Image 1 (cartoon, helix red, strand yellow):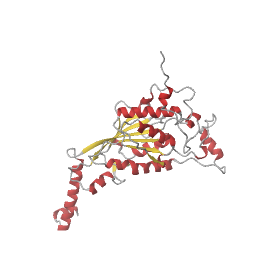
Image 2 (cartoon, one colour):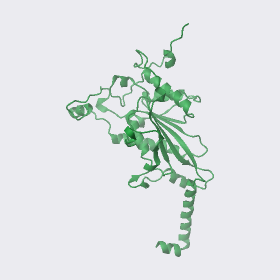
Image 3 (cartoon, one colour):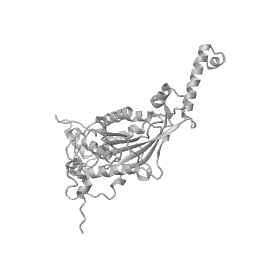
Length: 340
């Protein structure tokens, strides 16, 4: 049939074939190095500053624990660090819990071009809901048990009338997948004339790990790499899916290189939509479901970055206490005036 179609084309078949060829050529031109413009999105996944519940060592998922004095210092340090090392923040998202919001606001306050902008706050970025364990102390592992202290406690109390289980991994992944689809992917569809995106996401340690998984799942395995000199885990052998934990204001720094709409390329809106939102069934590797074309590249630049915390010491006596917003800027508060 394929041979007959080519050798004895009817006018209708000929027109259909020409349309297929024209569309293929437009897509080829779009991705051709001679016709393609590329852009790098800087993406930071940041954990909030230290909280009162962090210091007390109690579970704080959806519980709205405030930042400590130390936590505000950490956020202010990170804000200045990002301002000195990057272009202005173009997009900033945060969990709607105050520890993330206040951290995000500190980052924006450090921006020299900030004029009253505010982070986009979302319930999708909240920490895992610890249910029954919210506000309760960390349960230590029992010596005679292979279970963690929390799991052992759960097995004893899960049938209690007031027991509420912790949020499942599947639920958290559903939330982070939705965030990526609704807020992150649209930023990869910008035109050549727009500013390079510097995107900040301020959230919580556990949900950030799931968010990283949702981001990583967009890319074919061979399009993901580590920056030179960067290793993950002991010897760099830990799978990329598991980057470890986030310190307070620790950040995961990512570069996403992607093609952008070239006004000189003859590509219609349907083609752009097909490139920007390809079908999830597209395959790049055996058994590897990919949602972005292989022209999209992901580079991991830093894992749990803490350079901004060098030299930061805990303020004696009050460093672990809740921050009072009535105080003047926190670092100047602790600077002692020099006397002759």
